[in-house]
Amino acid sequence: MTSDAEQRPIGIVRALTLLLACQLAGEVLVAAARQVVPGVAFPGPVVGMGLLFAVLVLRRGAGRSLEATGGALLRNLSLLFVPAAVGIVQQGDVLAAFGLPLIVALLASTVLTLVVTVYAFLAVARWTERRRAK
Amino acid sequence: MSPEIVQIWVYLSASPLTWLTATLGAYWIGDAVSARFARHALANPVVIAAALLAGLLIATGTDYRAFFDGAQFVHFLLGPATVALAIPLYRNLATVRRALLPMAAALVAGSVTAAVSAVGIAFLFGAPREVLASLAPKSVTAPIAMDLAKSLGGVPSLTAVLVIATGIAGAIVVTPLMNTLKISDYAARGFAAGVASHGIGTARAFQVSELAGTFAGIAMGLNGALTSLLVLLWLALAG
Image 1: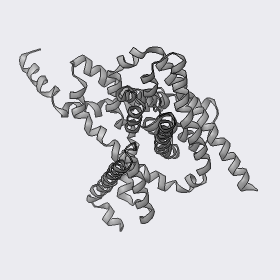
Image 2: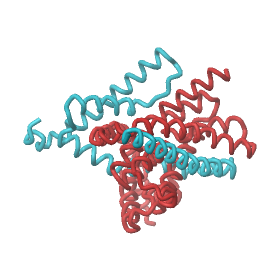
Image 3: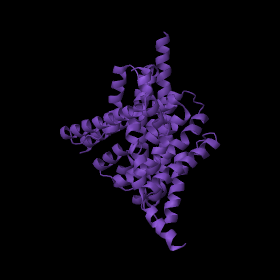
Image 4: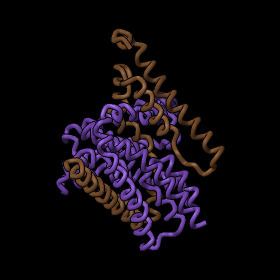
């Protein structure tokens, strides 16, 4: 990975190819796993994340073009959820049909999950810090 | 309107180009508003953009499918963006390694809380069985959640709505909530956002800090895996 190779415009093409290839391999692995265990629910892209991570470990880093392309995607991650979010605005009547209970359950559960998760994390983090300090 | 303009509109409204442009433009506005309010949690760019677009669809009588023909190009990038989460994960590997035990504890506690509390509250309100089954995987990323809802006897399309709503609720609530609780550990904050509200929470976490975003991304992936396992276990025990 020389730096002038990274600067050529082909860099973004290579980075996208690597990202898509990892996703594709992830989808194939999930499909194969479904043949063996029919109930398996797992998205290919998350498996692809694991595969790219393995690539990064082997390559000892992402390199400039992958950093730039991946960074551009992640900095605009919110944009990528807009089409799906428009779908829910359109289906607002579905939420309304099940009424208040569903909305209350959803909101209360989300707040509760955030609080429980963050305190579980902090409690164990403090415990491991203390053990390490000993 | 003159007939020529109507004809041009008839052509444009059916073209993917129009709705792809509108999606990017709406997000541009949403992001500008969010930046104007110093990335305040309530000025969520996803919510602003989606509301603008939904208003536009209603005003022009366009159905969601025509809109999605254009917007799908943006939607498609969710896949490679999820893969790209490996990059900050690798960059922050030292911090992540030190947090393995806290993450494991937080994952189990959060994953169980998310499903049990949602189903419990809706059950107390007398929600029907298929609604409970659709609600159980609401904190998990949409493709997994819809599969899980199906195997639990829920309605996948209802689950999709609940998942997105949970994501938006978490993304709006997480920053003010954590500030109120005076929690300054951004790894812990991000992890909670990812467990409670999957990708939309992760997107919010990346707005706040890269470290928070990294931990949110890990949490999203792990919560998908653990919830799937718990559902398989539940089905084995209940069936």
